[in-house]
Length: 237
Image (cartoon, rainbow, N blue to C red):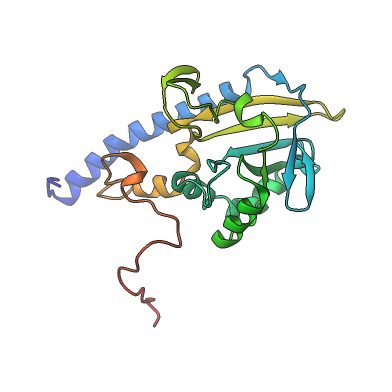
């Protein structure tokens, strides 16, 4: 890093100048949120049935009595024994939000193609408390463009892309009205999901930033695989 070292007065002036840009970004984000909420909806006509830890559940069941549902398309393929590192990174941010989301008429569920037994084993290993079901017996992942046949070109993030794999990440949002009809209101893929990653928000505040060249694969691990660099000592000890 080659940051200039300045006087307090210069520091304040630089900070105030940057604050103008931060406020512009905040207002633009507010505007985008309103425009996102005004996008047209698409009715979901397929009755998707998933495998849950206690038996079959439908997409409607995943709302758990609420009108809004956020789905994480969690990369965990049929033969995988553990989930994608990046998707796990996102999932680590979910448990603490659940009481607030649920109280605000929002439910959350993760959906993967892995068998439910593999999902449950990994979910328990990671200590997550959110609903997670298997779409291995239906076309949900394919319909929402996060799972693919092994082809050179796939349709992902609203365009055709070169990809040789079978799983990619994303999120989808659904609404259920009082009559029980379900609507698909929004989906986001690739870097479009970064706003859900509070860790990135914190890192972007730090002097070194994200400190990565090739994305989160440079440093993110399953949270039970990090090496302990040093023992944390509380300031009150």
